[in-house]
Every structure is written in structure tokens, then in C-alpha cells.
Image (cartoon, rainbow, N blue to C red; front, side, top):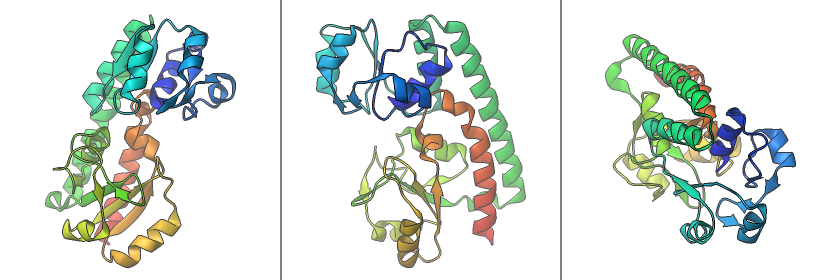
Length: 252
């Protein structure tokens, strides 16, 4: 799981971490020198076994159940399940305890909490300067052909809420398929196109803008909205700058 690999690096587990996935692009030095054991859904089980791990950290959403269960027959597996900020902070504490990095994990959790509390205060200030009832109805796309968005039980939804937006599909579960007609029906004023897992580009903004007049469409950093390890330290500043810019655009 890429965000948890980055967390292991932040906690100083350079020597202990022996295998990562091909999607674990941060930090770059690990991506280039650590053994890659496949993709998050295509783990090379034999290669993992050759590494003889004392601990495998897996993720309920990203990894395939059958592969996790197969590895769990011979190895200790810690399965994480993160759907909001609170879950993420508990996960960081748990991994800190499992790896002997309790102190470092505790300091990280406290700093993330501090930065998100500051973000909340900044959002309240912004709301006093804008119409509080005018929170934009927002859709966040993670995939194309078919278009897929995020439901109310996802980590990305929690980040949208932290930004002060209303998820237009918050009554849905997980990652439902949608179409342009549904975006119109939901009266979306803001459409966010993520950089991952599908790499949306400007050409996709141009394409959708023709079909959704009156909807502001913006490319966003998917890592900030969906990575729930140490990258959470960077997310609040990104969200604060982003929401301020978005609200000014919409009001104009």
C-alpha cells in the first residue's frame, strides 16, 4: 500500500522494510532500490515468501482477499482498514506499536491532528467571508470509462468534508459508476478530477466542460485526498490553499 510504505519510511524503518509494491513511488530512493513484489492487486506470493517477512502490512481495500489469506497461512499479516482521518491516525499508532516506533508514531499523530485543527479554524474564517450556505456540491472522479466517483463511506469523502465541500454522491457507498447526466441531476457546482488512480489531464477538463456548463472543473492532487500515512502532514496546507482558490473562482 503506497501511503503506508511512505509511512514506514517516515518512521525510520529503512533496514526493516524489505519489499514494496510497484505503486509505492514515495520515497523515490525506496522505489528504485527496494524489492517490488508486484502490484497491490497482483502480489507475487512466491517472491514475498522468499523474503521471509516477520510482518506483512496489507490493506482491506487495496489488496485482494484471497492473496492476503494465502500469505496469512505462513506469515503474520496486519490488515488495515481506513475510511476517515480517525481511522488513519489509529492505523499510524498501530503500525508504530508493531514496528517498535511508538514514540515516532505518536509525535506524527499529534502533528497531523494539530494541522487539521488549524485547517478547521481556517475553514471557519473562510466561511465567515463567504456564504456559509453556499458550500459547493462537489463530485470527485477517480476513473474514466466508466466515470467513477466516491461515496460517503470513503477516506476521500472525509477529506472533501474537511475541505468544507458537500459530496454530491455522499449517499452512495464506496466507488459508484456514474455518468454526465447524473452529474447534471445532482447539480454539481464543482467537479474534481484526480491525478490518480486515473491520470486526468487538461484535455478531460475541456471535454467535460462542454457537457457541464456552469460547473467548475479542476485537476487535484490525488495523493493529498487519498494517501493516509505521513502525507497527511502536507494535506491541510494543500486543502487550505485549494479551497480558498476554489471558492473565489466559483463566486466569480
